[in-house]
Image 1 (cartoon, helix red, strand yellow):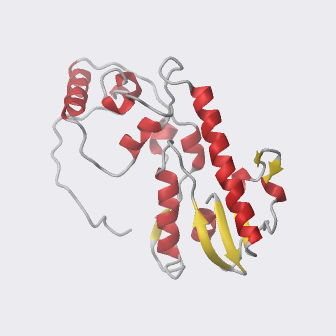
Image 2 (cartoon, rainbow, N blue to C red):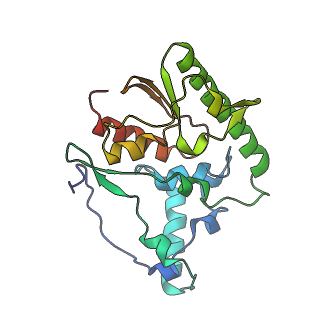
Length: 228
């Protein structure tokens, strides 16, 4: 696998065994990433996205928590299988390596207690907005004479009684000319517009939840199919 093109030198000051790690969810009262959330998952973008500078008080709080865990370790059992889990890494036809994000990870991410965020109302509102845009994109694609594809895990969804599976010109299978890496990536993209075997447009719909998987899928798609 190729090396990452951008690297930053680091020095290990404190190192914890995973069994004695500090769960970030337990620091929700000390970190600004948990403030004014519009969704129970919104904080995950700060810890799962590309590196960025954190507020000084957040950094100091984390350093203090890690140092305390080093001097007064507390055992917190965890599932070893989750620690070892990494996204599937596949080789494209060009020889590049790409990772295939797992949507199930986003759905099962840690959520905050109901006292902090009204999970039910937020999820319902986001689901409705997402379904609306997804349906409109499916309808628009069919109306302009293109074949359309909806993410394989969204085919049973609907918007205001309109089943996604009933969309005009919806295809059931993707073109066979794509390699495994491409196929596994694009089959989870929210909406595709196709003309014959050619992808004309790809859409990922995000609101306030983590956009990591969507961005990674799009990046991988361009890497694998640069002539789109």
